[in-house]
Length: 84
Figure 1: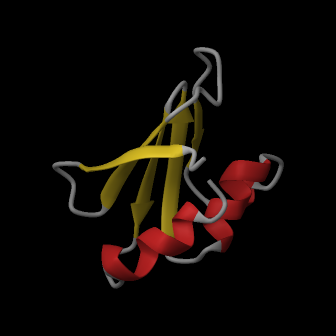
Figure 2: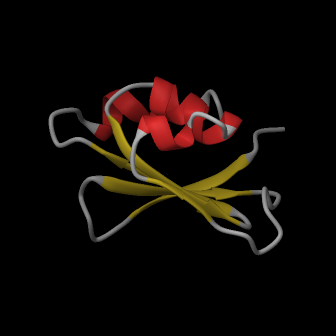
Figure 3: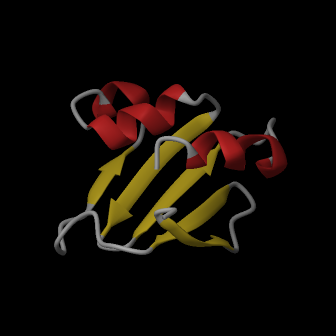
């Protein structure tokens, strides 16, 4: 069963929110502003390794990913879904 329940676009055109079927944390948030800071977190590290990701924030049942403005979501969403 896929872990992603829904994908929501945000007011920020460079951010998208993945709504998950099950929580990945228990109320603890994790925020990474670059790949170096995410190196010790397997999920965040994998998302940055997809490329074109500028930040990752997640808690409970959602993950918010910001991308650089030079890539479209159409190209990036499928690649981000893999590590999730």
